[in-house]
Amino acid sequence: MTETQNSKQYDLEERTFEFAKRTREFVKKLPKTTGNFEDGKQLIRSSGSVGANYIEANESLSKKDFIMRVKISRKEAKETRYWLQLVDIREPELELERGKLVQEIGELMKIFGAILEKSK
Image (tube, rainbow, N blue to C red):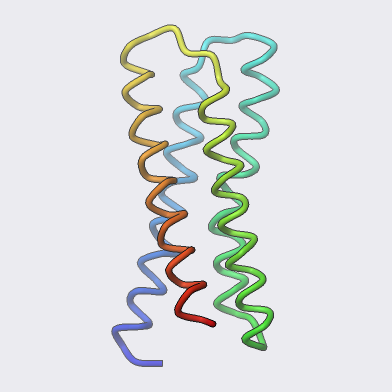
């Protein structure tokens, strides 16, 4: 692997990690409702799975395993977007924050899609 590929791999691992951290901070600010408690748990799980599966992809032993893990990362990203859209927000400031997180997860989904296209 070239140095550029290595740094891109690391950057995406770091980017997905930062996204999961930002998502956790966002969940802490949500109104304390039963729905948000349950949806927030799901949001935290799926946001962490995006990066965890990407790390697994980078440690894969075969191309087939790599592709499967990246597909799982993309699937978890889609699920994260779903939970982000479902949580109940009552403050404009949180709505802005949600919008930024939705934009970031959309970009990550596109990146995973591009990785899959190049891996064919």
